[in-house]
Length: 465
Ligand SMILES: [Mn+2]
Image (cartoon, rainbow, N blue to C red; front, side, top):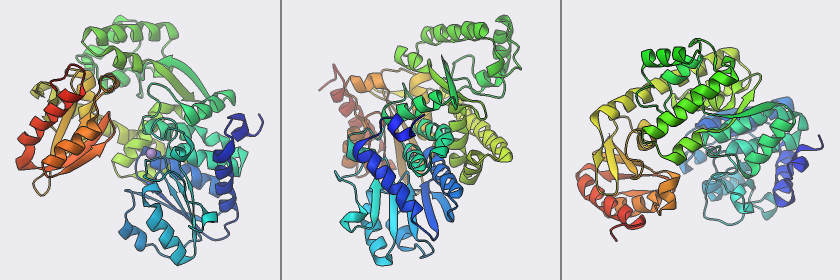
C-alpha cells in the first residue's frame, strides 16, 4: 500500500498539520510528557501515541486523568521538553499557551471536543501550541474522529509501521460511541485501511460479547433483552433448543446457528416493543482482530478500566500485556454486573412518567447516563426521553438526560432543555441534543421536572406549545 495518509485521502491542511505534529515529536530530544483523558478514548489515545514514541526511541512519561483544569496546569513541573495533550486541551488552549510561553516549551493538542474558536493555535503564530482538532477542518468531532483517531494519524505520520495500531484507534472511537450506526469520515478511512491491510476482518451481526455464547447473552446489557438477559436458565434452554452448545465461544458458533439466534433475537426485541431504529442499530458491522478478538468488546474492556479508575491496566492491555488483558476483561464483567443489577432494580421499581418525559432515581451518579440510556431503549417507553437523577453531596441532584435518534429527529434537544430548566432552578446544565447533563439543588427537583416536561413537550412534534 502507498503511504497510508495519502491512501486514506487525508490531504490538505489536516495532512499538513498531522505531518507537522510528527516532526515536532521527532525533533524533540528531551522528555515528552503525555496527558490524556481517563475514559476509553483517552486511554487508547495515550497508549497509541506512547507506543509510537517508544518505537521512535523517545523518552516519555504518560498520565491519564480527569480533564485538566487551570490549577493542574499551573502546578506542572518543568521536567519535559514537549507536552502532548490527547483527547483534551482545546477548551484550555489559551492558558496552556500562556504556560508554554512562560516555560519556554512547546505543546501539541490532539482533541476532538467542541471549542469556541474557529481556527487552531499554531506554533508559527507564537502561541507555543500545535493544535489539531477536526472541528477546525469541517470534520465532525462527535461522529467522525476521536482523540484516538488523531493519535493514530500522528503515529502513522511519524512512521508507517505504526499502522498496526489502527485496531486501538477504532477501539477508542467505539468507546466514544462513534461506530453507531456506522464509522464515518476519518474513522471510516481507518476502518477501510484496517480491512485492506488485513489487520481486521468484518461481518454484519449483533454485538455478542463474552467468554462464551452463554455469557454473552446472560450478561447482555446493550441490548438488554428483557426476559432473557440476566436469566441463565432461560438462556441455557434457548441455546439448547437452537442446537447451540452454550459453552462454546461466540466465534465458534456456526454461521447458520448465528443466523437462527440473531433472527430470533431481532423478532423478540421488536415483539417486546423495542424501537425499530434501536433494533436496526444492533445489526451493524462487527470488526474482529486475530490477536485481540472482537474490537467492540476490546473497546469496552479498555473503557471499563477507566470507569474502575484502573487506566494503567487498559494502557498495558494495548501494549500487549496478557495479564492486563485478563484484568481488563474482569473489570468489564464487574462493570456489566453493576449495570445489570441496576437495570433489574429499575425494571422492578418502574419509572415515573410525565406527559413528555420519564424520570428515575439512580443511586450511583457515575452509572446514571448508562442506566438512563438503557432504560429508554430496552425497558420503558422509547418515545419519551429519560432523566436519571442522582443525589450527590451537598444537597445537590445530578441529572443525566438521554434520548435516541428518533426523538432527536422529532425535535428533542436535551442540551438546550437542561441549560434552560436547570438554569431557572438556580443550577446549570447543557450538552448534546441526544445526551446531556446538569445540576440543581434537591429542593428544586419538582419545579425542575415540571419545566423539563414542558420544554420537551414544546420541542417535540405535536408538543403542547
Ligand atoms: Mn474522546
